[in-house]
Image (cartoon, rainbow, N blue to C red; front, side, top):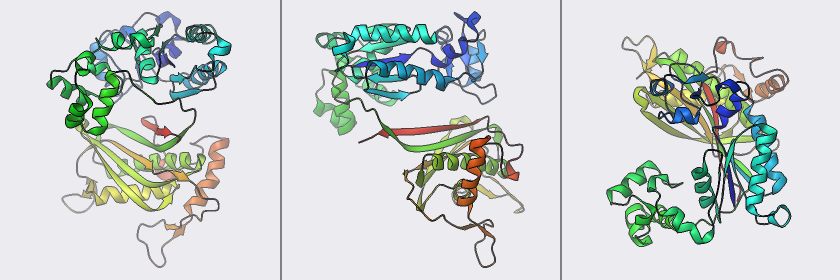
Length: 416
């Protein structure tokens, strides 16, 4: 098994156009008061900068760092890397834009030893794409991943079967792939700091303190056990988007505009994938990164952005996030919001010929209420968006609205 991980992928793609910055601290991020670090060079990481950190904090840690915006063709380079991997083996499991597992079991008959294949892959990526990467080789996914992490940057580490415990035992438990910060803290409270110490405890003791699933998982990790196969096909489990406001806001108009922009983009994504959502999750964040979520089961599956928008806004009011002001004349958020997000869940394939739901433009349902089949309207607009751009046609309420701080994301699970 091989795990390949591109080194500081976003940074190194940007450096292709700015080679003079090699060897200097670099941070890739959108500029803005609420921006977070997308990627950092190893020189910036030496100062404590890491992905997901607020950009303002990263600038304080590494004041000399150059801030580069996200604008490289990351998808192009990601696809090129995966093609190189598939030239060696058809059993490639891409787990993110910049990393993948490769089952080399059958590939060695033609391609040579696992080490020869890994070296050839790394050389091709360097020669054809001018990008560095690291690789780990071992008997399973967990060990290969740990080996590639240990080989960074731009290295190759092989962990043979007879040296698994020698490799794992000195490691701090918080460095184990699959052990989160909370589990590591609890292990430390029991006096367990290294894998060697973790291995002294049997599965029964671990299950009694961490639960059956987590306890058995920790028991297996300490012994380098991982039976998961490479899975070449994945299906989306959910998809969603979030919007971070430039400043914390209680303005209902700003919040609803953000939700509408998110919902319309989410609807387009659902229809493009031929999916419908059976549930929605609303995510909202206050100052200080206090974050909450609320799941909303749906009586009928949806793929209409406008319908998602209306459901989400109704949920915000039902949850008490949008309330009447003290004078009762207008609405406002109960607390200033920093971020709002909507995620579509329980995805299922859209039924052929599924009748589109009719619903009112006016939130007050009833006789005489103006109704529109938004599903058909949005499908008609999909063609325009595909031919031109997602901004070619948009509701008047979104004129002037920017999606720069709105980020799409997806969650995947393995095809069973």
